[in-house]
Amino acid sequence: MTKAKPLRIALAGLGTVGGGVIRLLDANRDLITRRAGRAIEVVAVSARDRNKDRGIDLSRFDWVDDTTALAAHDQADVVVELIGGSDGPALALAREALAAGKGFVSANKAMLAHHGIELARAAESAGVPLKFEAAVAGGIPVVKGLREGAAANEISRVYGILNGTCNFILSKMEAPKDQGGGRDFADVLAEAQALGYAESDPTFDIDGIDAAHKLSLLASIAFGTAPAFDHVDAAGVRQLIAADIAEAATLGYRVRLIGIAEAGAGGLFQRVHPYLVPLDHPLAHVTGSLNAVVAEGNFVGRLFFQGAGAGDGPTASAVVADLIDIARDEFGPAFAMPADALTVTAKADSGARRGRAYLRFTVEDRVGVLAEIAAAMRDCGVSIESLIQRGEQADGAVMIAIVTHEGPERSVAQALEKLRGSTSLAGEPLWMHIHE
Image (tube, rainbow, N blue to C red):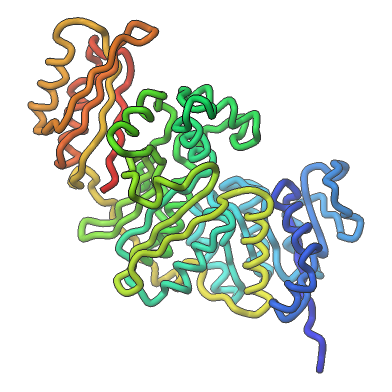
């Protein structure tokens, strides 16, 4: 019996994940070979710093200084891109690799969210795979689950916790005080940065951009639409304070940053936003840096995926899983159907959506403030279910929390706009949706 030719890899990026891929291929070499039907071997690597000690023997690989030149490496069958960035070297490498007829594996959700259709068309034209399991939810096989396991289903909604940094921060804030909880956002963010859970510039994570990139990819696969990152309404957790977490707990909820996508007659709805999640919902119990995704299919019902959303081991696991599929010649269109079959869908009007909301105001402690807020709600048709006023805080301001009855989101937006610029408000109001 002829021994199968190894699948040969050119690897761009030797950071946490790139190093993890090499370690995983070394540690599980025999098992991976048996599952793939042939060996998977790294033949060339590229990174910014050639002399950095990464704890890996790189002398066995060809070193390529120009990352884009990996696409032309004559021994490589597949290029793995782990350098990040929506444009620049990552995009140049993707284009060159696919044009050269090489398979392409990436963990780069930003690049795929912005350029996924272009790259999918290039891969189809060249007859090579484009795979990105590691780009969404780290080690959780949610891309494969939607693209393959739920392929026969019409998906009505996909949603979940898509950013481990934010979930770590929220979990810390909600912990008991004797376990380091009860602190405001900025304090817990500093701890997350010190522990390596958050970047020195955490903007993409805490403002919901990272989760929005991932959501646009999940929505494309789930609904057969072209990725539409620009249509994702994204807000993060930067405004949260300890009192919001405590108030949510009193009401029977936990706060989670949720990405949700839903297709309907009015178009595709995509949002990343902090939500109050009921304690009896599985997402309320996803803690630490874990991710979780829920998909609802018309025949399979509710699917729940949970696991580590980042880190060298889980993300490397997803990268190598893609490589095993390629080694077996098991791959299809990047977004579950040919690029030309993906529809371009209008952005749904979020104002028409109905639901309940949690609104928090920090106000000056003076007569008439409560009446001004209540009047704005009344004039815009927002029905108040409960109103809570807490005592004076350290800065002399007072916190007012409102839970609304179910109603159109447009009414809440109009009420908040009506209050914009009010001298009674000591800061921007916080709006969190209540997940039913």
